[in-house]
Image 1 (cartoon, rainbow, N blue to C red):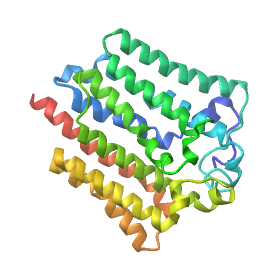
Image 2 (spheres, rainbow, N blue to C red; image 1 turned 135 degrees about the vertical axis):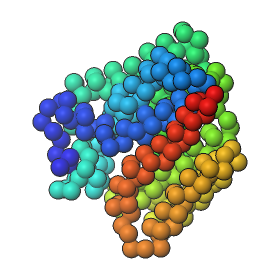
Image 3 (cartoon, helix red, strand yellow; image 1 turned 60 degrees about the vertical axis):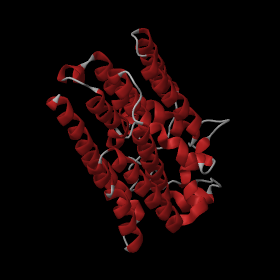
Length: 290
């Protein structure tokens, strides 16, 4: 189990990067590429490949590494990282681990610099925004994760890789409704993931949107955000809005049944992958049709 960190630094870093959640950052890049490209050849343009490569693994090491480093003490109460059934590793520190996390952050800076130098200044700005929000979410003096509702709002950072990919290929920024809908989706995803941590967070003195609202209130908040996200996407494309309706329906289902939120939480990588695939295929169909 992942509660005890793997013996090698490489194995530990792999676990720290949350492989199950890699597509939470790389998936939006695929969606952005599919909808930003105008011809099939652009799907494999250097900016698209570079953004996908960075946000698949290095960005995850950076994001979760910073998070775990500043949560090392409070994670003693986190059921996801302690006990026999823990699926994530607690931060163990060390020069090598710290250096790799820093290097992954610097790789993002280098990526932004390369994009800016090759005519993608707007795409670079989205990458920089990701790096800044990713740090501010976990690290002092900001530590947005302990300032509700900013803990939820700041998790729109998961949308930024997709925005960067779209801009890199299309030249202009994504539609405002798409950004709003995706941001609301990410806000709800964050709060839903925090529901299993309500009691441990309260014992550790951590305030989050979920601890303020309580489990049932947090589920209602998630359902409302997801419903608004579906509405925003529906104004762009009714089909996309219908696909997004799966989320508020799931939140309502969890609230109305005895399904443990901590169990439902682990369904979402597969659900998100399916929804992301549908959105990506929709974009690819437009590229193929010309």
